[in-house]
Length: 336
Image 1 (cartoon, rainbow, N blue to C red):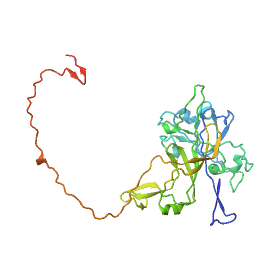
Image 2 (tube, rainbow, N blue to C red):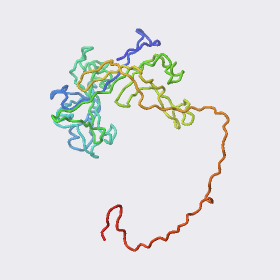
Image 3 (cartoon, rainbow, N blue to C red):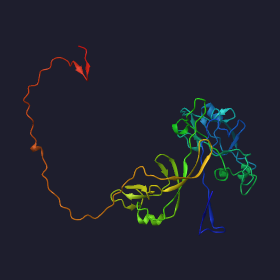
Image 4 (tube, rainbow, N blue to C red):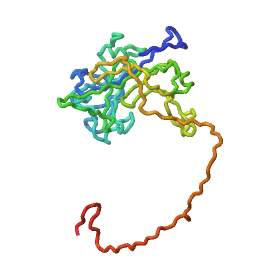
């Protein structure tokens, strides 16, 4: 969570907390899971029995207890060796297209795959509050009821499972000769502070607007730096315009070469790199032409040729008469 000063905040202290989320991939044989790890699901909970049968609506209905009003939950386990989610003995896995299965009230066709709602271990304890994850989801109006829809905002950690027959629903990994699944470094968070002095590469108005401002960017690999604010410009004159048809979205500024940044990321071995120093270097640069008033220009007139100026060439050689099939085609001798 980041805390920002807010001059217009109501109450004391005058700070606003901004919570951001980090998504991590769980790989096969992940040590954070054991055979006894149980996860509870309240929303978008797939029905393992239906999936195993191969027909019907794949999600459990959202039932509520008539006496307490409490929403029913469902339990799952993650098999880290088989890399699949299970409800009992049934795998929550769909790898081939099956039109007999549907998402029912959650959307019909499964062409986009299945993604569960937040799943969590209800017995896990939050290190900040000392409460279990289930206690964190207690409703404000009744501590004995669970407000499951708060899971993705109140829980420190939760899991989702995705499966389907399309490429984007599956995980493809590199596996070493010893069977170890290879992991990759995660995307890096990059902290860039816009120069307080003139950049010369951006306009004076842009330098004034962003001088000293801090930007949280994201680096996803070679040529992949995201988070620079943008604007729309006209296709003809390149002037700033409201976004819409006939416009082009471009970065609002260019980071000068050799600008110093601080980057942080989680390495493939689980360790973290924090606030390391790096430098920005442009690989490509685009020059945008601006409209300008031109002085008087002189033109030279040229006479263009027409079809009347073309003369057919004379053929003074008599073409031979060919009676036999070609002996060679494309360098290959033909059978006679």
